[in-house]
Length: 232
Image (cartoon, rainbow, N blue to C red):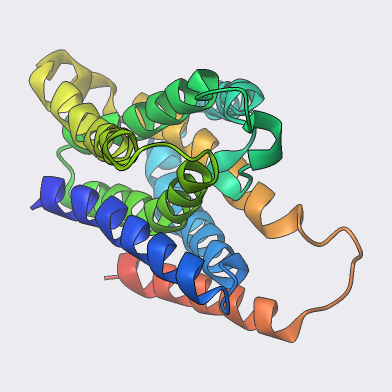
């Protein structure tokens, strides 16, 4: 079922991308805000307490490492993970391989703890955080590929590879059994990745510092659902 959920999130995102592209009436900003708030909620309400359950300070280094690795990946992905497509940068220049490889690596890395962590609640929290986040990312990826005027077969191939990266990460974590001994460290690393993405989504788009009641409500909803989904 984990594989189905991960694949379905990308498929849903691609179909939504096609629909939103045709309608051009709905912005995905609120969907991004919801996913960022949900990701932040999952991280703070569940992953953070689990990581520091043993009160070991070295996990902080891994959180920072995850944060910095994501910062490095975004130097190549141009921030597609949190809503940037920068289509104009790539028009008439061919396929942006650096963007795609970085995005694929991000999807692979964040999924490894799902396979290595045998704590049911942790697996659930990680899974749903990734699923919710993948929908808007898939929308943006689909629209970027359409703007680049790629053939349908190339668009499908790229979307399919992206969809497979998360299940591959899960299988990698599950296949190498020794990773189970480092599940807390891996979770701390992914917590750092989630922290960077969620805070960037929520705060970079408010440079004018104007209060947006709709965005605030969407953020509260994302946090509330994250709280309810891990407080059982």
